[in-house]
Length: 388
Image 1: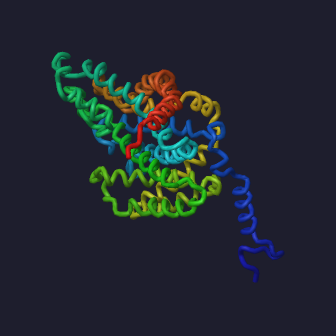
Image 2: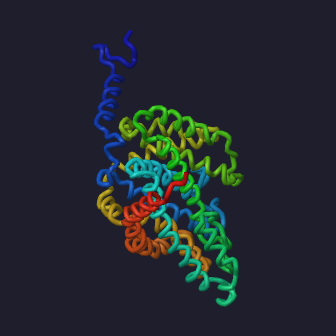
Image 3: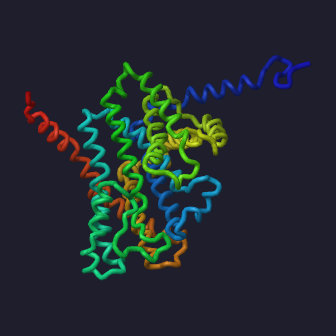
């Protein structure tokens, strides 16, 4: 009797399947092959993720809770949280590449600061001193005298919190007093940058130490979230940082393995099964990172039509992320009964031009200052006399 999986002539269909998978893997790019912006669509993904955060927050701001989002019961987390996970994974890959190509820790630090703070400063000051007086329940004179106004600006610019209130602002909205809830993740991103800078200076990207670095980082990524509380509402700073470390440093790990990491759609199914199997286990975040991270890298190999060129020329993702919240809350203050769908469309129509202007007028020109600032700081350090 012949085995059911083998024909009488000795041909085994399973062999053909294995050969096809091997051929797919052999013909698929490695991560190292797609790290150039001209060869990936990471800009499209960042734009899409920022937009998904806007969509998710339309439900959060409208109802006062993310539980109102239709997909949350199925996803286990809000659409915005899933998008932020992908943000951190892509950030890990790209920021690791930035450090690896930088001229040292000063150059790296300058690059990270210029990427975040110029646009953030514009956003915070515009919201606090232009939008705030317009939407506040307080008279303008009382608004500008309130210590809460200056506390908001200071705390938000120092990344101390993303939930600092403005005096009398959005107090009647469903998600009352929250001005720009998206900003709460920035301090964790900067903390991840800081950690990467320290590790990079200690030799993380040294070719001689590659496999020690990969092994050590893999252990951290696999174990750092094991004892997190089941309910994210119980997370404090340390728990949130551990949560984000999984995703950011998962991206860094992918970069370290860039010459070996094959990006092929055939791997998505087993990673999805791992993701599903890990739900409600201590390895849930690791399973999510593997599936979402690999899926993002795979999606980044696609052309996405003219969007790739548009997003490479104009990176509106950060602008959408930081400007959307105040626009959505203002629209709800003006039109309290507006539906989440209409809110999404109206907010996107307003925010997209603002984000494009932010990139062209603030963010891109600021990034061009990187060599000037780096050289200035380096020369200043060299000119400081060494005592003793």
